[in-house]
Every structure is written in structure tokens, then in C-alpha cells.
Length: 250
Image 1 (cartoon, rainbow, N blue to C red):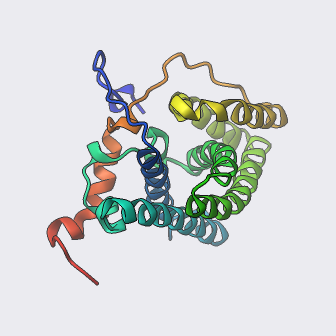
Image 2 (cartoon, rainbow, N blue to C red; image 1 turned 90 degrees about the horizontal axis):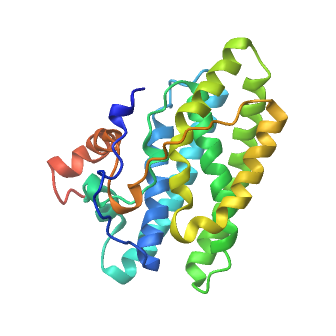
């Protein structure tokens, strides 16, 4: 994939700060909603039936987290979960750029999932200690799911790296391509999760013998609404019914 599709924040533009607790929760919800949509795209297309079911279930897990967070924030802001998911433009979404990247081949999907799972293993235990009982409950449940997700993605990293020459090359290519989207995860308050994430990623690289990418370019902007072109296409597909028939109710 060419760098031309990686927009991020326009060069030289001053990005507005989005640092309220509510905005952070919406960002976490957006991460999970967008990733859920990406994983759902594998349904009926995965390499085998077991993987088809697994990725579909992961999509439901992430969607459940997104819904719970939207509902909680929406209670205070007078919005519904549908308004958050279906009523905002790409510039209003606050997800990290990593989750909106296309599925690519199975190796690329697994590397993207491994990066996100490893991050969420740090995030959810932290939020489970929140003074907000609702957030703490959502995070505690999400952490249990993240542990299973991580076992799955980590296991597939090992399996592909130790498989054929082609599978190993594919997973290395995916690491090289997606690495530029990892730095953004740890901006601002999320910097506290970096050491834990680095440790688990380094452990995986040691187990597999895969090469750690050294991409000097790290793109950013998702948390303040500057996205790659991929999110626009994703939202067009996801939101078309509500955009075509505003206010439609089931």
C-alpha cells in the first residue's frame, strides 16, 4: 500500500486538544466500533469456518464494548448510541488510525488485532479501577474478552511465523506496514500503556524471530478527527441506511 493513502493530520496544522474524560471514552468506543466493522467484513470470507466464527465473535465483543460506552456517555450528553455510530462524519470520529486500516490478507488482520489486543490488555485493567462504577464494570468485562482475543492473535502470530516461508513473509510484511500506526496509540495520557505494550510485543518478536520494524514515520491524527481515506469508505458502508432514511427506527 502506498503512503498516499495515509493522510493523518495535515502537515503544519495545529490539532485541537481532545482531553476530556467523555471524549476519551468516545475515542475508546470508536476504536471498538470501527474494529468490529472491519472484523465483520471477514464473515463468510475467512480462510476456514472456525476462523469465520471466531472473527465474527470478536466483532460482536468489540461492538458490545462500543455500545456500552456510547450509552454511558450518551446518558450525560443526551445522545443515543445510534447518533454516535450513525450520525457523525469521519471528522467527528476519534478512533486511532490503526483500527480503520483495511483487512488486507489474513496475516495483516492478525497483526492489526495483535497490536490492538496488546494495547487493550493495558487499557482495560486501568479503566477497571475507575471511580465511575459504570466505566469500571464495562472495562472489567472487556478485559476478560481482551485476554481471550490476545491468546488468539498471539497464537496465530506464532503459527504464521513458524509455518511456511510464505506465511512468515506475509506476517513480516504486515508488521512492517502497520508499524507506522502504533505510535499514535500512546499519545497523551495513554503513554502509561507504552511499556507494557512494548514488553509483550518484544516477547512475541523474541518467540517468533520476526524483525522489529524501524519505520521512522509514525502517522497521527485519529484522536482529533484526521483520518486515512479508509474510514470514509467504511462509514459510507456502515451508515448508508441512516444517511438515506434519517431517523429510521427498527
